[in-house]
Image (tube, helix red, strand yellow):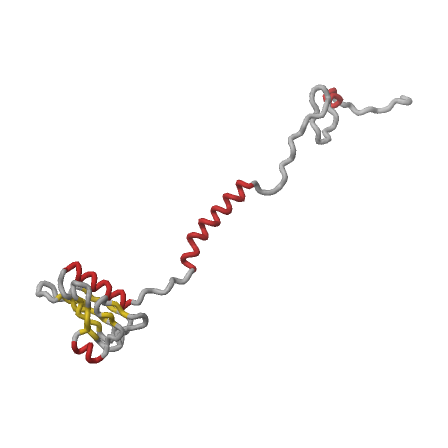
Length: 167
């Protein structure tokens, strides 16, 4: 019988040279090493700036589609201005005929072309014809003037007063 004998566990020599790891590193001379500081959780300034720039670009692309367009230029006034410009470029008198349904036709005074352009406006009321000179002035033809179909027309500038329409 063996008395007083304590059974010991076998420990490797390497286990004796390295104490259990407690989170600190030690150098060969058994002094504590400086541990680099743990990076705090969160975002860097650069990461935040990148996200803000991307959000700004996305907003710049989306916002114009969401905004309602500003007041549009009156369609008839725009058509008259275009006719005036065409008359000046061609150097001839042009006739702008607008039907009650809003269909319009631009004709030249010369024989070379009768129908220069055509299109449709919102319904304008009474039909009328404007005679547009290459010098920039315009006037309604006699039947249109007699019916009062075009009111508020400045004949010298060939412009409509605000709110005036062909009626």
